[in-house]
Image (cartoon, rainbow, N blue to C red; front, side, top):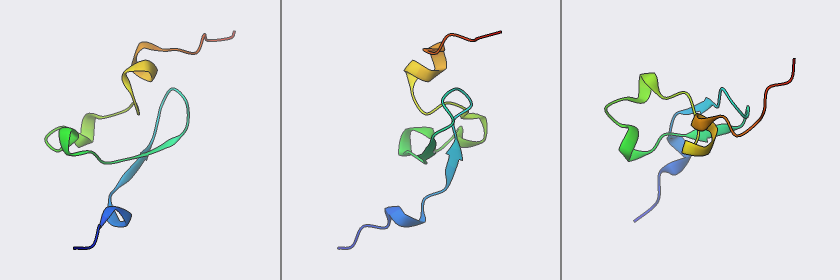
Amino acid sequence: MAHHKLNLPTKICVECGLSFAWRKKWARDWDNVKFCSERCKRGHKKKQP
């Protein structure tokens, strides 16, 4: 059985700017996913003026 993870859709995280791939837990809400992790969602980087 071959893995097909190379064909998963990807997005760029709004907070950190890194690319992340689709996960099964995001299947129903993929259009609204903006962050790669909970840490980014909480805003781990402090915004500089």
